[in-house]
Length: 108
Image (cartoon, rainbow, N blue to C red; front, side, top):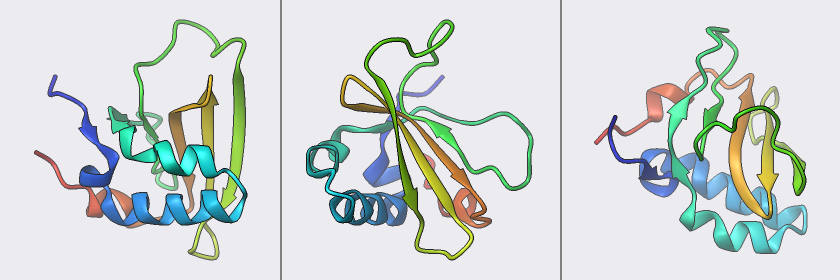
């Protein structure tokens, strides 16, 4: 498995959008820390509408204490973005309804 890459390199357009959306929602700390978030792996659910991905290794079981979800409305009208946050670190980015995200991915 390759080394996880910074989200700002792997999906730069989404990274910029997430920073903007988080600031709009008043999530300034998360927006400021987004440069440290790394792309680990695409969701393997197989659904065509899912463009979600892990930004940390998958937990064994639930995320547990310190977990919250930040809901954002993506810039595409039909896009929904939910960030799973554990102890103020983004661990999963759920992206639903955005069809071209995987095409924007920049592999190593």
